[in-house]
Image 1 (cartoon, rainbow, N blue to C red):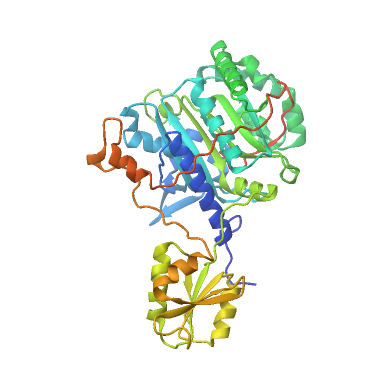
Image 2 (cartoon, helix red, strand yellow):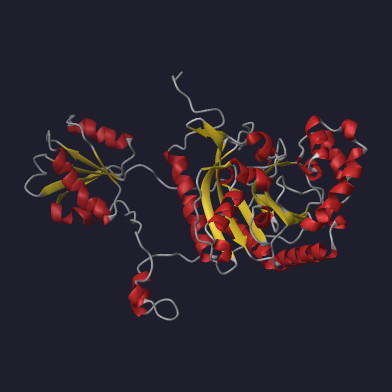
Amino acid sequence: MPTYQAPRGMRDLLPEEAAGFDALQAVIQARALRYGYPRIDTPIVEDRQVFLRSVGETSDVGSKEMFDVSLHGAGGLVLRPEGTAAVTRAYLERGLHRAPQPQRFFYFEPMFRGQRPQLLRYRQFWQWGLECYGAGEPGADLEQMEFTAGLFADIGFTEYVLKVNTVGETSAQPTIKEALRAYFERFRDELDDDCKARLDTNVMRIFDCKNARDRQIAAGAPKLRDLVSDADKAHFAAITEGLDRLNIAFVVDETLARGFDYYTRTVFEFHLANPEFTKAGDIAVAGGGRYDGLVQTMGGPPTPGIGIAGGVDVLYYALKQQGVRVGGETDADVYILSAEKGDGADRLQLATPLRAAGFSVAVEYSDRPLDKQLESAVKHRAKVAVIRGTPEARGGNVIVRDLVAKTQRVTRLAAVVTEVGRHVPKRPAPRLYDGPDDHDRGAAGGGPAARSRRAHVHRPARPLRHHPGGRAREGEPGSSRSAGQSA
C-alpha cells in the first residue's frame, strides 16, 4: 500500500489517458475554431458569488458541491465547478458585452465538484464547452446541437440519444413553478427529503431526482411545454423542426429541466445509450441550454445566451467501451544506444537530428552492456534502435536495427534520418504561429503569400455526418438522469 494516495474522487491521468484527452481536445478545439468559437481560459479559482449568483444557492452545486479555497486565511473563493458562469464573468469583466455581438467562446478545462464519486463521476473532471452571447434566435441553439452531433459522427461515437425540452422564458417561469408546486404539494409526504426541500426552493429540480418513487410522481406532473408562453412554444417548434431538417435524431423529454437556475427556454442533453453505463440511471455525455437572463443576473445588460458543455471523461470512456481508438502511442519509436561508456553528449548529438526530423526518440543513459540496453529498448516498446560505439558503428557509421523485424543495417550518419524513416513514421511538430503576416493580409484576410504559407499546414477536411435516424415520436418516456458532469 503506497504511503500517499490521490484524494477520493480524483485520479491521475496516466500517459495513455492523457494522450486520449489531448487527442479529444485537438479534435474538439479544431471543430470549434471552424465554427467561429475561439478558445477562452478562465481561472480555476473564482469568487464563490460567481456561481451562487448564476447556478442558484439551492442547486446541488451551489449548496453542497463546491470546493472552498482559502488564501492567507481569507475565504470566499472556490474551485470552478462549471464553465458557463465563469465565462460570463469574463465576458462582463473584460467588456466583451460592448464588442460586436454575438460573442462566441470555446473552453476545455478541469472542473471540481464535491459530489459522491460513482460511475464516470469524479470530483475533478474535464469539460469542453461552447458559449454564445447575443444571439436569441433558435439557429444558435440548433448550431450547438448540430456541432455536437457532428462531432460525435466524426469521431465514430454512436451510442447516445439526444433529449430536448423547453423550460420557458424567465418571465413565464413563476407561473410554471406555481403550477408544478401545486401538483407536487399533493405528494409532499411521499417525496424524499431532497425533493421536499426542492419543492420549497426550485420545484423544477424535482425532475432531476434519482429516487424511484419521486421519478414516478414526476412522470405525472404537468408538461412544461403546456405551461410555457406562445413565444416559447414557437421557439421550441423551430428547434424540433430544425433538428428534423438537419436529420438529427432526438426525443422530446417532457421531464428534462436541468439543474441550474439560469436555464431558459431550450434545454437538451446527449445521454449515453450503452447498457454498461445505464444500469444506475442515465449519464449525460453533453448537455446545455439557453440562459437569456444570466448576463443581466450577473450585472450586465439584457443579453440572450446559449451554451453546451461536454464531459471529456465520459466521452473518453464511452468511446473506449464502444471500441473506438483514442489518442496514440506514448512510447518513443526510436532508442539511442551505445557500446561506449560516458558518451552521453554523443548520444544526444545523435538523437538531435532525428528529433528535429520529427521522430520520437529516447536516449538510453546507462553504461550497461549493449544487450541489456537492447532489452530495455524492447521493454519500452521501441521499434528501432540506433547504435553507436561498436566496431561496425565507428568512423561516421551507426547501426540502425529494426526491433520488430529483427534486421539491422550499418548506415552513414548523414543517412541515418532517411534510414530510420524506412522503419517508423515521423510525428510532425506543432507550429508556434499559424496565420498570415500583417503585410500579407489582403482585404479578404490574406494574400497569395499568406495562402502559400497556410498551405503547408495539413488540416484534413472531414464531411459532417449526423447521428443516423429520424426524430423519435414525441411523448416517449424520459428516464432519470445523472448530471454526467456535462453541466
